[in-house]
Image (tube, rainbow, N blue to C red; front, top):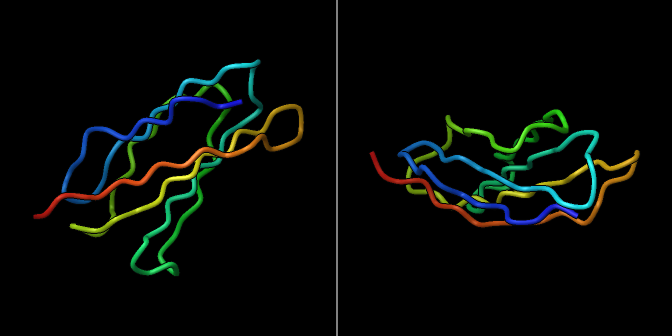
Length: 90
């Protein structure tokens, strides 16, 4: 299971998502970033299983986002973890 999804390093158009996995080595991770004010503005990013952070930029300022982290373990996704983050203003 993936634990401790942390959002930090906030800027006007982004932030950094970090996580620390437990329970074995993961095949890969998928980060889903969803604009809570406009669900059409969402993106999915796939990362290798040895990645533990991602800087996310190019987002809208002063906007709330839901960040979902999905870990792929032995061919199956484990239960995702979520965190809400809000970008700063210009």
